[in-house]
Amino acid sequence: MLRKFKKLSRIYLTLYIRQTLKFLLKRVILVIFPLSFLFIISLPPDKPEIFFEVKDHSVKTHSYLSEYKEISTLHKRFESRKFKTVLNNQRRTDTSHLTSLNFLVLEYDKIFGQTKYCQYFKKTENNYEKGKQKVYLDECPYRNCIFTCNHSLINDANAILFSGPDLENVKFSKQELYENLMSSIIDRPSQIWIVWNDEANKVSDELDIFKFNWTMSYRLESEISDCSYGCKYPKIGEIINPVEFKKEISYQFKSRNNTAVWFVSNCDSNYRLKFASNLKNYYPIEVYGSCSKYVQSGFFESLFDYFKPKKCGRDTECEYEKLIANKFYLSFESKNCSNYMTEKVWKMLYLGIIPVVIQPNRQFYELSLPQNSFIHAQDFDYDPKKLADYLTYVSSDFEMYYSYLKWKLDYDVVFTGYQNEKRRLCELCTKLNTENSIIYYNKVSDFFNDQCIIN
Ligand SMILES: *[C@@H]1O[C@H](CO)[C@@H](O)[C@H](O)[C@H]1NC(C)=O
Ligand SMILES: *[C@@H]1O[C@H](CO)[C@@H](O)[C@H](O)[C@H]1NC(C)=O
Ligand SMILES: *[C@@H]1O[C@H](CO)[C@@H](O)[C@H](O)[C@H]1NC(C)=O
Ligand SMILES: *[C@@H]1O[C@H](CO)[C@@H](O)[C@H](O)[C@H]1NC(C)=O
Image (spheres, rainbow, N blue to C red):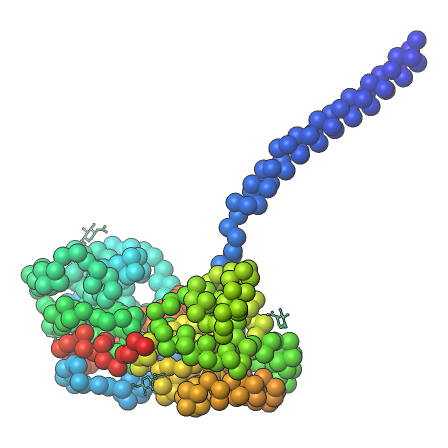
């Protein structure tokens, strides 16, 4: 009897376990599977942030000052007095109305809709006590600049920073804004009004009324112009073994395709789209982005391209893979403006893909980029066939290819907002400490609109 019962209970037990397992399995299939499917499809399809590992020693205090000397020499070469008044050695760099030697910078408006560098601090006995680490100036030789967004401190501010595009977008008249400012400011002559504008778009002459003291832009004539979209700096820290380096480049030479890639999503500029279309007749080009349809050799290709799944978004893994799998990038700017070269060209240098450029003229690239790091269509009389022949040559000759990457032994480049701004704010702070001329722009719109062709 007992044995029978035991046997029975064993049977029941196995049955029970089996049932439970079945039940669980069903639940798994019914619930967990669709749930995980939902989870997978709800994940964002692309991971941004591939390029943006932050190297924190991109400004080294000791090397910065010698770099800064180079930047200042460059500024001097481009010192154009056409648009501004400069009174040498007339600015006091001491800040007598503050007892400390801090420079207070008021961010007057938002910068592309954001408050950028505002710090929280309290005023104690005419001294500013910082409440937040100054991440931007950590490695700068001058770290005594603090940023606020508090308009009540307007008369304590040594400098006021205005964002040009945001200022143009305010709804009311600039005249009104200017008069408001002037009625609340006690000592305008000792204040530095800075306008920040990195766009190569036309600047409205409504901004002229502010008689800005300094500009912060990509133009080398600007008081603050270092690293607007990216910059190079002498390699610090790690030492590269040249033999190993050449081996690595030789590996890349063999593994990278002989293709020029291009990601383009602003179709306004006709010139560059036409140039790429012509170039495509002689050298393989892969174009991504919403304007790719304009860079086709014929009807059938466009039709074929239309059906080909070629989605490859900006700053995605897909983009990254395309970039590091090819030898050249068409870094064609949408505008032909002095000194105007956007972060794309810097990013390509960073990734070891040789940028092919058409505008602005060669001299501007030479001033900023590492030596022999780019190919300029100007050297081929803007003839797509000649340029393509040269690309074919560089694609097939390792020493030629290597000559365009050799600069990496001596220089690093940065191209992300965070890294660029560290250098830009460092230049701003250095200037506040050292610039001893009185400067103001009589017509800031002329300055920005000069030497800029939209083609
Ligand atoms: C702005 O500054 C004024 C004057 O120091 C101070 O009273 C006020 O609390 C500050 N506002 C903010 C939001 O910090
Ligand atoms: C390189 O070119 C080959 C042949 O055209 C092509 O199949 C391959 O997908 C290309 N590789 C990349 C990463 O684009
Ligand atoms: C860009 O402008 C410069 C200066 O005006 C001119 O010399 C050059 O030919 C232009 N480049 C192109 C590609 O149109
Ligand atoms: C700033 O510009 C104003 C005119 O807009 C001028 O009066 C003042 O002297 C300038 N200040 C400095 C320090 O350059």
